[in-house]
Image 1: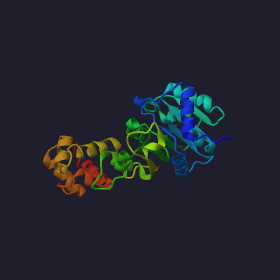
Image 2 (image 1 turned 30 degrees about the vertical axis):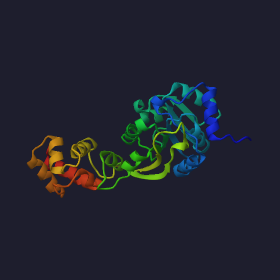
Image 3 (image 1 turned 180 degrees about the vertical axis):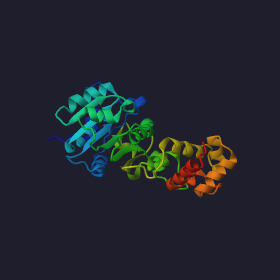
Image 4 (image 1 turned 45 degrees about the horizontal axis):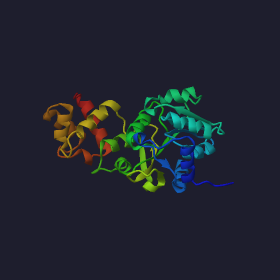
Length: 286
C-alpha cells in the first residue's frame, strides 16, 4: 500500500475540499511522523480508553487515536473541517465528530449523551495557541476532569506551566493545583503546515484525583490573583492592594501562614499558597 507522507496527505486533503489553513483559527496541521509517534507513546492509548480530542483539524492525530482507543470524541469548531473529518474517517465506528466550540461544551453532558457517564477519559489535542489556556482551564475545572492531558502548545506557555518557585505565575499555580505537568518534547515549527512563528512543546499533565492542596477554589484563586496583581511587588503590598484589605490584616494573614511579608508571589510554592489561604480563612478576612 502506498505510504503517503503526512505533508502530502495534508496538502491533498486541503486541495480536495477547497480549503486553506485559517490564520484566524491558528490552524497549523501536524505533518511530522516522529512527533505523532511520540504523542501516541506518551498518551498510552489502549482499547479500554475513552479519548476526547480538541481541534482534530484534518484528522492526522484522530486517525491514530481511533485506531487504538475504545471511543474517541473529536470536537472541531470549523464546520468545513467537520465535513472533511466525517467523510475521510467514516470507517471508524468508534469515532464521534462534533462541530462545536469546546469552550461552550459541557464535558459532563457530552460524555453522558455519548453513553459514557462516569467513565474516565483522556484529553489529547493539538491546540491553537490562542485558546490553549482557556481549554486547559475548561477541562481542569470541569465536573468530570480527564485523568490525563496531552497537548501540543506554544513552548513558552508550556515552560510557564511547569515553572518552580522563583518563576511561578498564576498559570503555573492554576495547572499544578490540578495535576503534574511535564514537557515531553520540544517541537520545531517545521513539524506543522503551515509552520507557526514559534516553537511548540508536547505537554503532559497527569491529573490528580483531587486538588493538590485542599482549598475552596474560588477564594483560593482570589487570593492568588491578588498576590500576582502587581508584578515583583512584595506580598504584603500586592495582597493588600489586590484584596482591598488593610496592611494590618494582610500582615496578620502572612504571619499566621508562616510567610515573610517581603516575599514575592513568583517565589511561592503551591503548598505555601494553600497555607496562606487557610490562614485567611481562619482569620475570616474577607
